[in-house]
Length: 343
Image (cartoon, rainbow, N blue to C red; front, side, top):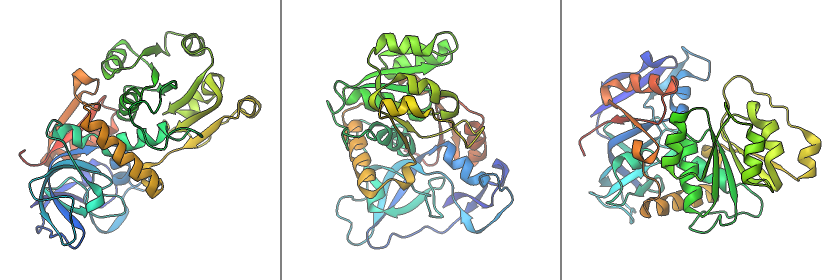
């Protein structure tokens, strides 16, 4: 089978196409023929070595955490899945050498989730990191639901910073599915069109509007949850926008600094919570809740992708995975996908 691997960290050029033996699933494992692989920022950052380029790896690494395809073999003790089932997978390359940028991948059964017939492989490959991250940001509030479902966020106002990104897009969709009122900030008319397609209730252009005034007009008592992509730039704004007992859930930064100055007294006054989120290291219970909620949202048709749904797709063949990584690193708007095998 064909696979993309890298044996040292570095730029996209370290990725190469190789032939590998077909892996066989062991007990409790599932082999999936990957149809579409999703590329996330975490994938190129892992390949780049977090600033330590040129470091040799102990074994070849197949990149990409997310993907969707068809089960083609199962090991002993697998009961929930059978060959021929359509599925999506998550965290494929986390602490493992085998991501989804290859024709077949073997994973533990728990990391392989049924994909409804009405959901495309593009949807399945766009879940994983973005949707599971978004779920955790929306459930990090003290007293809030541990697992999203229709109505779980009724009466809650959510501010999604940078709603045109993949996580922001998923956060908008999941929050709306759960019954929240959603406000998002964007930087251009084109991105405003995308978030409206995703279903957001209110849009604030931070380059043209006073964000605090605009959000406070929409939510006079403040917002209960901020889904934050750039805390260094936004922490002062977030502090002024939080409702009492509100939470800022931080899942990314702009890469400019590791340090964020958090105003102390105003956040004390509102009993604010700042929750950092990394989906890989959430608890098993949080991950299970996220996977089950995302699967339910997919079954309800709540997580569509594509330009009409506010998440444009950019595609590459497997042989051009390096170009796909470069596109994500360059900040391509929407979702970058790699076509691995025929559907």
